[in-house]
Image (cartoon, rainbow, N blue to C red):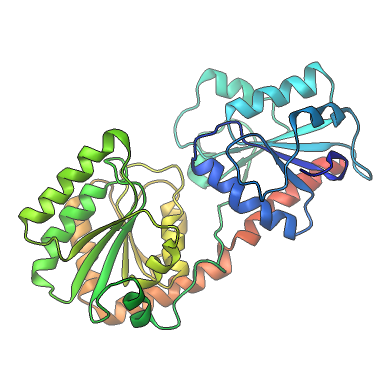
Length: 349
């Protein structure tokens, strides 16, 4: 716990279930602190290592921190906007409210009601901004380039993971489910690998609840194709950056996505990306770093992957270009600084 008197920004997390929003908070807050932003989290489901305040500390919000006109409450869900509005407008507490929207669909009337009462709104992509009817600032997510980076020795990285260093690997990482397009990746590999004996494929991620049957069906499909030793289901791993570093090609096959960080994580590892045109992927991937294909188009996925698999020079160039693009435009420090500028503008008013 930290002293509320030393905190200028509050990042609430009012859902226990791990989600993309929760992951964003976990990754951003330490970077924001390192940049001098006096931020703390509030709520359950977050690591104890993050600086946090207690709900009873909210009684201090009538008074602004030293040298500031107010505090900032940074909400990312409806359930976090509503209490902030009550604190500010009903109890007259001295806060300003920022909301980050990642949704790429029409907002409900209730959401619009809440969003219109924000002091500032951030959109995580240009597509997301198109669904907002209030002024907003687009700030794309960034990633930790200290965690995701190319390997010093790719062959040794593969060997350490129990992979064959003489093979090239295409990968699809994330939750195993229909929405994520895992079946499209598997079907594309079933089509591609028999004619490319030097390539294998990796599915990394976890299937839960109703999606376990979906995963079982995919494994059965792979077995029937006689490719169980070449299309590997490796499950969920805490050392996922190592698995990115072992890849030679990344496929992001999602049918729908809110934002989607996996292409950036692959590019930061110097791995070219073939991705469906969903989420923010069109704003992340450039022609020289990979390829965008229509969502749910298996033929386009097969053709796109084949274009890289069969052209080692293009594969290497796209990987190098992707690394440069992420380093220049998508480091998480840049995201944190841009958000910090929003905070500063509100706390100076």
